[in-house]
Amino acid sequence: MSKKTVIVDPALPPSSREEKSEVLHREMVSEEGLKEFQSNTTDQTSSAYAELTAENRKAERRLVRKLDVLILPLAVLLYLSAYLDRGNLGNAKLQGLQASVLGGSDLKYSIALMVFFIFYIVLSVPGTLLAKAFNPSTTISLGAILWSIGATCQAGATNPAGLYVCRAFVGIGEAMFGQAIAFYLTYWYKKEELAKRVGLFISAGSLAGAFGGLISFGVSSITNSKIPQWRILFLIEGIPSFILAIVVFFCLPDRPHVSKYLNEDERVIALTRLNSENLGESSVGIDKKAVIRAFTDWKTYAVSIAYSCMNLGLGSVSAYLPTIIKGLGYTNAEAQLYTVPPYAVSLVFMLMVTTISDRYQQRAMPIMMVFLVGVVGWSLLLGVSPVGATEGALRARYFGCFCVVAAGYTNIPLIISWQAGNTGAQTQRAVSLGMLNTVGQSLAILAAFLFPSLEGPKFIKGASINVAFQGLGFFITLGMYMYYKTENNRRDRREGGRPAPGTKIDVVNDYDLAVGFRYTP
Image: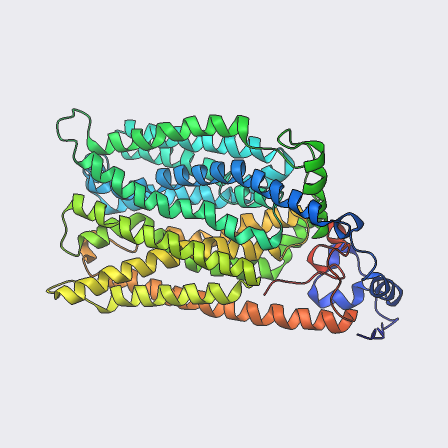
């Protein structure tokens, strides 16, 4: 491809790092700098990565397997315990929590759900930035210790205020973990490896739903204990989380350049892999200008709103799926048991979709497909009444439960990977991922009030609002897809084509506006 001449208006003022945006991308690149970039695109690839022989690539695969053996099981177990401790309020509700502690009040139950989300939302960006400022293994494990203590202490709640305080600690701890663990994975894995691995630990959310239902069903069979069933449930799920947090503190590897889990040869390969995709920052600390870039970038908020649309469905599922299924004519114990199959199916569906997304490096298309699955599921719950329903109608509603659970969980790793891959520097990435929760969890607060008992078993308001927001998420994702494709084409024309693999791109200073940077559509 021949090089294209770049004409820069000499009247344009020089751009500073603080003033950069997509609109100023043309101004950022001087004619001389662009020509130099174009001339060096093919020969400035990372020499270490270009020299990898077949034997070196075998060593790289061995390294990835070694990372998977330790990092992924710990991430999966953390997410499993987090979702068990976050979502068990819905199970405990059916076992007497609402009656004995909250006076049977729907409003107080909704407030207990909301307290978690308030702290989770407000502290998500600071919690994720902690993983950049300090060792992520330390901050993540401390977050796990906090939420496990809060979750366990729920068993001792005797009034609404005590339960609210416990839920606050669960929210604070999970704010230090939720997006920080996804950010942590970007220290170790390349972009084309990320979605499947994020999907693997997010799949623990589906497992938590399945296990939570089974554990609750088992606890419901304990009838001769002096301790109420819901207190037993909190103890069974909270204490193992605390033990796991201690294990993670000592076993989760630090950053590649200082981790004792790697030998020197493995460290070189790990850093070379990351440098090949301009992911290998070794500095500890927070780049304030990268924080500003993330907060002033409209794309951060657009993708976060799409994430929020997904979270409305997920919040509805986490808090009310047992209640919705009970409306199909089951007892409390049977409803707990019948929550298991939808979670199990969503696990398989998630792993399939994220694997395909990684293989073809497409994010928006699978995200849109999953939103459509959510539209189908919530439409079935809205349109098919459980009152006087035939067996076929009840099956249709149960199928809708499968769809809404799959839609709620599958888009989590897809959107997280999309946001992570379209940010340049680590600090920008940490803030952008944190904003997924700060903005993206806002509608989860609304979910806490969408399914009051008086509106059951139809729950028309909850289902209809979820249909609307699943559709909104679809159209936001479609718009972002079109923008990223258009912007990539514009940069291709501007820069004379795409850079060769391994080309050094100055994302540390210029973030996603750097010459050579391309978005993942």
